Length: 153
Image (cartoon, rainbow, N blue to C red; front, side):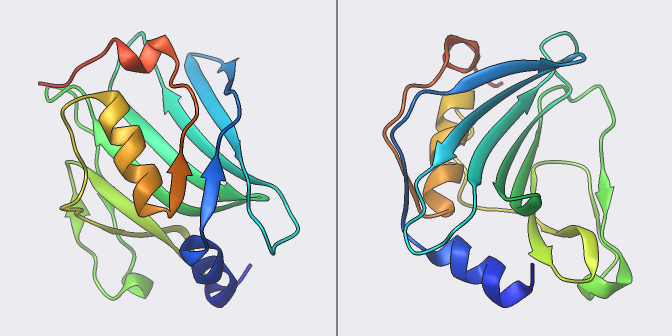
Protein backbone atom coordinates (compact mmCIF):
# COMPACT_ATOMS: atom_id res chain seq x y z
CA UNK A 1 0.00 0.00 0.00
CA UNK A 2 1.30 3.45 -0.86
CA UNK A 3 -0.04 6.89 0.09
CA UNK A 4 -1.47 7.57 -3.38
CA UNK A 5 -3.57 4.37 -3.29
CA UNK A 6 -4.58 4.96 0.35
CA UNK A 7 -5.73 8.52 -0.44
CA UNK A 8 -7.58 7.33 -3.55
CA UNK A 9 -9.49 4.75 -1.49
CA UNK A 10 -10.19 7.29 1.27
CA UNK A 11 -11.55 9.78 -1.25
CA UNK A 12 -13.70 7.21 -3.08
CA UNK A 13 -17.44 7.13 -2.41
CA UNK A 14 -18.26 4.03 -0.36
CA UNK A 15 -21.33 2.47 1.23
CA UNK A 16 -22.16 0.39 4.30
CA UNK A 17 -25.60 -1.15 4.09
CA UNK A 18 -24.95 -4.65 5.44
CA UNK A 19 -25.28 -6.12 8.92
CA UNK A 20 -22.40 -5.86 11.32
CA UNK A 21 -20.36 -8.74 12.67
CA UNK A 22 -19.49 -8.65 16.37
CA UNK A 23 -16.69 -10.75 17.80
CA UNK A 24 -14.71 -10.95 20.98
CA UNK A 25 -10.93 -10.47 20.79
CA UNK A 26 -9.90 -11.08 24.39
CA UNK A 27 -11.35 -8.19 26.41
CA UNK A 28 -12.12 -6.17 23.29
CA UNK A 29 -15.36 -6.31 21.38
CA UNK A 30 -14.81 -5.71 17.69
CA UNK A 31 -17.74 -4.66 15.55
CA UNK A 32 -17.15 -4.54 11.84
CA UNK A 33 -18.98 -3.93 8.63
CA UNK A 34 -18.02 -4.80 5.07
CA UNK A 35 -17.74 -1.64 3.00
CA UNK A 36 -18.86 -1.61 -0.62
CA UNK A 37 -15.95 -0.13 -2.56
CA UNK A 38 -16.58 0.10 -6.30
CA UNK A 39 -13.59 0.29 -8.69
CA UNK A 40 -11.15 -1.44 -6.31
CA UNK A 41 -10.49 -5.10 -5.78
CA UNK A 42 -9.79 -6.02 -2.20
CA UNK A 43 -11.66 -6.08 1.07
CA UNK A 44 -12.49 -2.86 2.91
CA UNK A 45 -13.76 -2.96 6.50
CA UNK A 46 -15.06 -0.37 8.93
CA UNK A 47 -14.22 -1.47 12.48
CA UNK A 48 -15.09 -0.29 15.97
CA UNK A 49 -13.11 -1.65 18.92
CA UNK A 50 -14.38 -1.21 22.48
CA UNK A 51 -13.38 -2.74 25.79
CA UNK A 52 -16.66 -2.69 27.76
CA UNK A 53 -14.88 -3.69 31.00
CA UNK A 54 -12.58 -0.67 31.23
CA UNK A 55 -14.05 1.65 28.59
CA UNK A 56 -10.68 3.39 28.34
CA UNK A 57 -11.23 4.32 24.70
CA UNK A 58 -13.11 3.50 21.56
CA UNK A 59 -11.08 3.03 18.42
CA UNK A 60 -12.53 3.25 14.90
CA UNK A 61 -10.68 2.03 11.81
CA UNK A 62 -11.07 2.05 8.05
CA UNK A 63 -9.01 -0.94 6.93
CA UNK A 64 -8.22 -1.98 3.34
CA UNK A 65 -6.85 -5.51 3.27
CA UNK A 66 -4.47 -5.24 6.25
CA UNK A 67 -3.60 -1.54 6.01
CA UNK A 68 -5.30 0.91 8.37
CA UNK A 69 -6.11 3.92 6.19
CA UNK A 70 -7.63 6.06 8.91
CA UNK A 71 -8.13 5.63 12.64
CA UNK A 72 -9.95 7.62 15.30
CA UNK A 73 -9.07 7.24 18.98
CA UNK A 74 -11.61 8.56 21.49
CA UNK A 75 -10.73 8.36 25.21
CA UNK A 76 -13.79 7.46 27.28
CA UNK A 77 -12.31 7.70 30.75
CA UNK A 78 -10.49 10.90 31.67
CA UNK A 79 -8.93 9.30 34.75
CA UNK A 80 -6.99 6.75 32.65
CA UNK A 81 -3.97 8.01 30.74
CA UNK A 82 -3.91 7.09 27.08
CA UNK A 83 -1.74 8.96 24.63
CA UNK A 84 0.03 8.79 21.30
CA UNK A 85 3.17 10.59 20.14
CA UNK A 86 3.96 11.17 16.48
CA UNK A 87 7.33 10.04 15.16
CA UNK A 88 9.66 12.50 13.38
CA UNK A 89 8.64 11.12 9.95
CA UNK A 90 5.25 12.80 10.55
CA UNK A 91 6.94 16.19 10.53
CA UNK A 92 6.39 16.65 14.27
CA UNK A 93 6.63 14.72 17.52
CA UNK A 94 3.46 16.06 19.10
CA UNK A 95 1.79 14.10 21.90
CA UNK A 96 -1.98 13.54 21.83
CA UNK A 97 -3.75 12.79 25.11
CA UNK A 98 -7.33 13.31 23.94
CA UNK A 99 -9.36 12.51 20.85
CA UNK A 100 -7.14 12.22 17.77
CA UNK A 101 -7.09 10.76 14.27
CA UNK A 102 -4.36 8.84 12.50
CA UNK A 103 -3.83 8.96 8.74
CA UNK A 104 -1.94 6.45 6.63
CA UNK A 105 1.71 7.18 5.80
CA UNK A 106 4.00 4.89 3.80
CA UNK A 107 6.88 4.94 6.24
CA UNK A 108 5.01 5.36 9.52
CA UNK A 109 3.58 2.15 10.94
CA UNK A 110 1.08 3.84 13.27
CA UNK A 111 0.18 6.71 10.95
CA UNK A 112 0.46 10.39 11.76
CA UNK A 113 -1.96 11.82 14.30
CA UNK A 114 -3.79 15.12 14.48
CA UNK A 115 -6.66 16.61 16.50
CA UNK A 116 -9.97 16.55 14.62
CA UNK A 117 -12.56 19.29 14.80
CA UNK A 118 -15.34 17.49 12.95
CA UNK A 119 -16.40 14.62 15.22
CA UNK A 120 -19.80 14.75 16.92
CA UNK A 121 -18.95 13.46 20.41
CA UNK A 122 -22.48 13.41 21.89
CA UNK A 123 -22.69 9.62 21.73
CA UNK A 124 -20.76 6.61 20.45
CA UNK A 125 -23.31 6.27 17.66
CA UNK A 126 -22.73 9.87 16.55
CA UNK A 127 -18.96 9.28 16.65
CA UNK A 128 -19.36 6.22 14.39
CA UNK A 129 -21.57 8.10 11.95
CA UNK A 130 -19.41 11.25 11.72
CA UNK A 131 -16.20 9.23 11.32
CA UNK A 132 -17.83 7.15 8.56
CA UNK A 133 -18.90 10.36 6.80
CA UNK A 134 -15.34 11.69 7.03
CA UNK A 135 -14.16 8.46 5.38
CA UNK A 136 -16.65 9.13 2.52
CA UNK A 137 -18.80 6.22 3.63
CA UNK A 138 -22.57 6.46 3.33
CA UNK A 139 -23.59 4.57 6.48
CA UNK A 140 -27.14 3.20 6.37
CA UNK A 141 -26.47 0.01 8.32
CA UNK A 142 -27.77 -0.87 11.76
CA UNK A 143 -25.70 0.29 14.76
CA UNK A 144 -25.52 -2.40 17.48
CA UNK A 145 -27.09 -1.71 20.88
CA UNK A 146 -23.69 -1.73 22.63
CA UNK A 147 -22.96 1.56 20.83
CA UNK A 148 -26.49 2.99 20.91
CA UNK A 149 -26.76 2.70 24.69
CA UNK A 150 -23.66 4.65 25.61
CA UNK A 151 -23.33 8.39 25.85
CA UNK A 152 -20.24 10.44 26.50
CA UNK A 153 -19.83 13.08 29.17
